[in-house]
Image 1 (cartoon, one colour):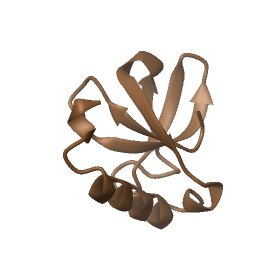
Image 2 (cartoon, helix red, strand yellow):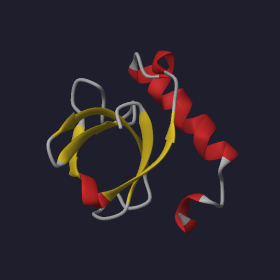
Image 3 (cartoon, helix red, strand yellow):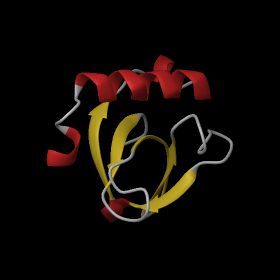
Image 4 (cartoon, rainbow, N blue to C red):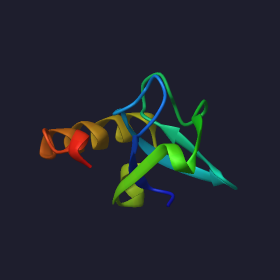
Length: 84
């Protein structure tokens, strides 16, 4: 799962796109490069996210790379994100 885009299915951030930066049992740690950085990831239960697409490891090395990867993913899939 690490290195996949994930869409939040529940909570105040429902519909938001993140990158999975680590796994922790029934939880994953999510970053988006902005308010949730690699150093301060969001912890969320697996059942509350929808993994959607694997990305290359070089796209997840820094917060700037994560932010750019998410921006490009959202642009390519605009309109489809809430349908998944």
